[in-house]
Image 1 (cartoon, rainbow, N blue to C red):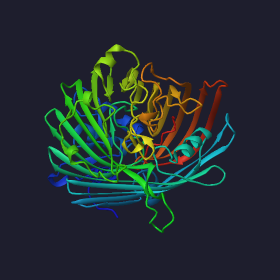
Image 2 (image 1 turned 180 degrees about the vertical axis):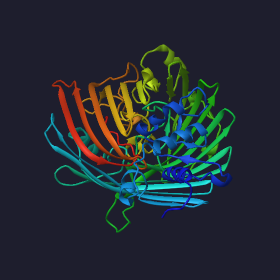
Image 3 (image 1 turned 90 degrees about the horizontal axis):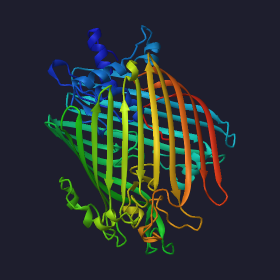
Image 4 (image 1 turned 120 degrees about the vertical axis):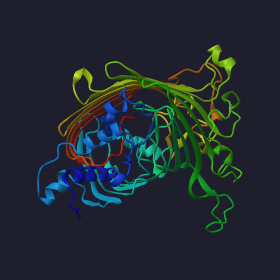
Length: 557
């Protein structure tokens, strides 16, 4: 369905509809939203990290009204349109499959194929593939309301290292719980939905089954998009140079399932029958202050608690509704607390030559005397990040890069049980490696015409548990009560595991509206665990496929 309006307005309406945002014609203000993925968001670096703006860049996904960023969205979504009057050609290269544009609302819908085939050339020589079929739908009404949803049904055979992760955690990384089929085949569904109401120029409310990310890097030590989607309510308020974000989340805990302890349900004689996954709550608060056009400082607080404790009671704790940052001193949040709480600091500074330096520091349990003694006290827990990113490097348009260092002390995100540790759906809420690691990661992205190129390199050293099961602090699902040594702990203790990872991709974007592309890739991974007899795992996968959507799938584990 097409509306006969001017060519320029028609193009802008199509672009806006692709983003699931409000229309600005007839005096309406524009508003746009976009699900977060690093590789899409980095395309906006020249607008996001420009010294001409004071954009709040750390809390993602964005809901944007900034004119500079709106223009960047438009340019990405309308990149090099193919001139054709043929309906089929327009739908393949330029437009949504279904596209409705009215003065007071817009609607779009797309079919999303995500298919590839590959072969592991270095490991067990297995053939890898993914057959994923999905859709996305978007609706916005006026200049206040936007809604988008997507869903996928997927089957795949992954490289062995991902296979091992999925079997151990029963979840496809960042996606959903997987069913195990024959011949290494995985089967899972993935869905997301988000609706935002722009209530006032100072406040926005979002209700979503989606992810969040806090930070300016590739990883986040505070709250990342690595784990599966979760239901949450998010309120964002902006006054002057200060933005405040508060998130209340209802999350999944399959490692601590609900059980019938009495043996009366569904029938007598079945004690401890599993009644479904356990549930947990999380509250995350972030205040971002743009001190100048160049300098930003942020303050973070989070708490995770059980929806139902061992006594069968708890529910939502209304004391965590308070929006005040630093409501409880970490000094008092020691290992006797029933909930898992963190404080964090972020910073960002825009340097010359299109560079931006950024960092994070996360603090969990803290005892000042032991912290400054430097004696490896187990219950002083922290994580840190330091990085630099740049856009249009060496004067080359759309040549972007990022270099980053991440680390976390042993036991940082763990707690007594999984229902109060820093996790969702059996995966970490922060870094994929949990804790007890150090990591270097670098990424380069380049876009020209409709071509996209990316390179990634990573080195990670983490400490694994001992062969006898002793808790060395990397597995955040191990209990506090199993820490073997109170003193003498250090990063990467235990069985040292060195991981080298490299990934290269080249893609031609057929339709930028839903990121439909032909993609050729090569991923190589080498891991060596220093057991008495070292264990080596190698993988080198060549792949080619027809990909689509903006969802992030993390293979760099």
